Amino acid sequence: MPVQRAAITGAPGAGKSTLLAELSRRGVATVSEVARTILKSAGGMALREEDPLTFADAMLSAQLVAWDDTQIEGPVVFDRGFPDIAGFLRVEGLPVSDAITRACNEYRFEGPIFRAPPWRAIYTPDDERIQDWEEAIASDRAVCAAWRGHGYALIDLPMVSAEERASFVLARL
Image 1: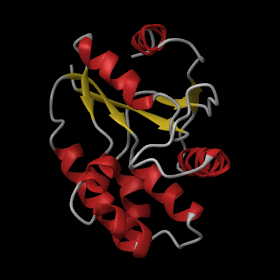
Image 2: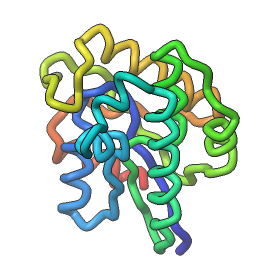
Image 3: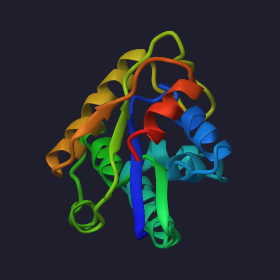
């Protein structure tokens, strides 16, 4: 069985990381969100705030490494993907580079793309999630448009527990 890369996209704070943790607990290979890793590193938050274009390039580089590291058989579920980087730039009002567009077109996810819709009841900002509720909704719109613009159909996740969401995802992998 070849690798089947799937992704979870959508609004910040909509339960993506919690869902990935549950999928991992059930034995599914997962890839953490590269942006969060960068934001947690020294200077990561400043880079995002002061130079979003370079931050996007850093996300692209990290996403490419994560992609190359998933040469396994079976499903792998990513917390976000290349089109999320394009969506980030659009939210910031910045142009999407040719390199990011090329990555969106050349590195194709074979598996389903799940969308975690904005979910007010569980949304909580944290040290890396700095968007307010309105910005989270705008981010969701932008990343979903980017995925759709690159030819993907999105499957909305139900607003249920992480365990139920994981069962929903597993039934579709």
